[in-house]
Amino acid sequence: MSAQQKAIRIVTFPFRAVWFLILIANFLVVLAACVLFAAFAAYALALTISYVFLPAEWTRALWQWPLDLYAQSHWFKGATITFFVLLLLPILKLWPSSDLKADAAREREATRINDDLIAARHRAQSQMKFRG
Image 1: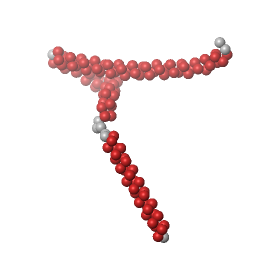
Image 2: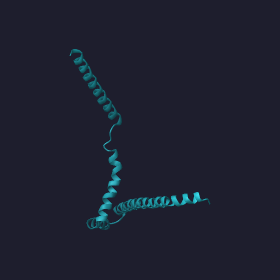
Image 3: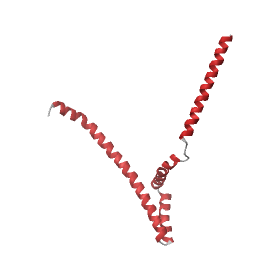
């Protein structure tokens, strides 16, 4: 191996190590988000099954557990709020929907009116120069 190749390896190794650490951090963040989503989905499934197949007392007990945890734990409260915000963001992006064609037509009309006002001002200025 030539000296140039060894030098390139020595210089690029720290960058590769940092890149690998960034990939690991991203993986952990995505994994945590997936675990959060899976936990809430599993709990929703458990509640659904409890409503259908289990007695009312068991369902009440199943509801009471997260209520107590929500009241006591700031982490659980934060995870719950984060989950529902992430769940509702796509819905809020589409609602209330805006009509792109109507927005474009409104913008074209505003541009036309603005151009007409600029032309009228230039005409008035040129008439004032012509008269005076």
